[in-house]
Image (cartoon, rainbow, N blue to C red; front, side, top):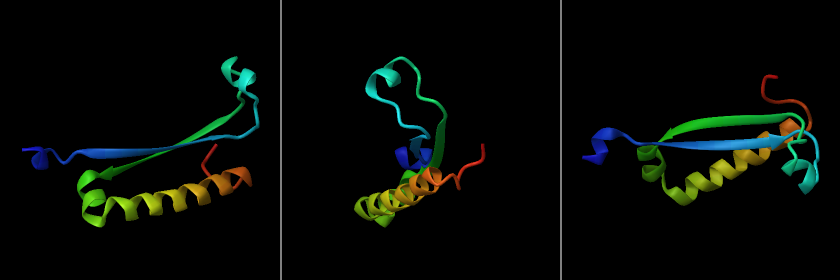
Length: 76
């Protein structure tokens, strides 16, 4: 039954473009935030192996966050 529903997994990456301390963050003074969300079929995640999928996602996230830090990624 669940297979017919084709459940989705949503991977979210949040990047804070300036460095705020803990108290600034709690007070809402975090500056600009960039968010990227990517949807995956649970079937593709499970079929390819969860460990492998996680490793690939972390590699992609590292590259994305590096690009954001250099001002080269995500439309403003």
